[in-house]
Length: 165
Image 1: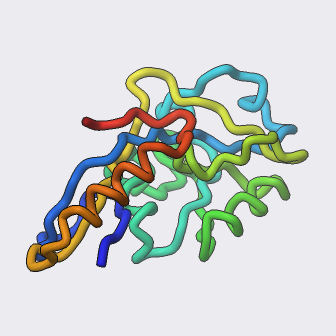
Image 2: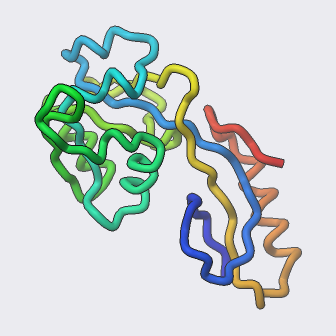
């Protein structure tokens, strides 16, 4: 009866409660020059081969909203030279590990232990984020259950996200 979703989505008549803002990270192959950096700007990614989720995946839309220059997919100096699509974030991470390109991922998808062939690097300020919400049907009247779920989520250690009160 409840869903954890990232904004924005069409107005479907759902009630929402903001949970947290989740920063985005850049995933690069460990052999890539950007892997040595502490942070990367979106501007620096323009010339990289960008790996994105396929059309219809909400995170692809989030990346394109926050970083609209990624939508150009052009071969000129102002846009991305190439792009490839994957069917899941895990697939794309393996594509990064194989050296096919770089990608943008949500903070909570970054493994606690660095992977052998992928390095996760923070964005420079202002760091792109997405708002994650708890959503439910407006006709759902078990507000205590919603509050219990929200409290349980807040009790979890969600490293790197910024809780929204």
